[in-house]
Length: 180
View 1 (cartoon, rainbow, N blue to C red):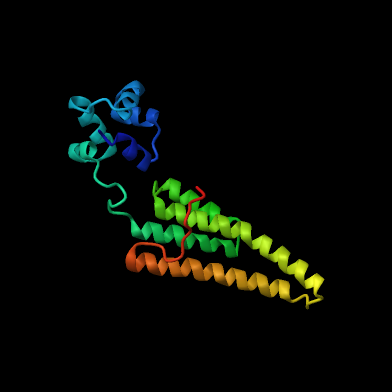
View 2: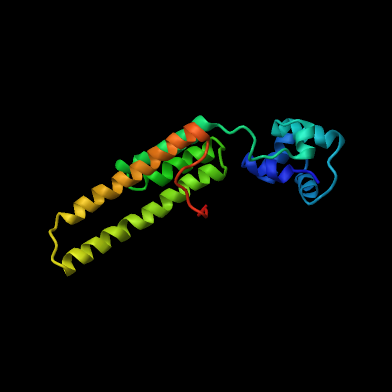
């Protein structure tokens, strides 16, 4: 079995885009992805278009173990700090960088998923604090203090994950699932 689909998805290309890049028909790409044997001119054209060797395309070296751009992944993670200025910046900027640089992998998806979950949880926690402070007649300063504490926790998560990426090329704080 060939591994064309995995390489195409890794590069975030559509079948049409790959066909144009390899100067092949879309139907040829479709046939190969469903199991037709990859050989000859088609193998050469696709390996050149995907910038991989013929052997890699046929044998499908482990795509996740392929050298990842750790610096770019750290940049994607640190771009989440934009949340301090722009409310949805912790999601939007990492997504833009991730897709623009075609660094879509399990780690970058985890980074964005974590920020999506955090963006959803933040207002819910604030609403709970407002409700509880009204219910128990707690000082009004509890809401801004909670907001500050939550922002600091998110900054800690981002910085801790950046340090772990630098050291071990993995995330320290991550979800057991991916939202994207």
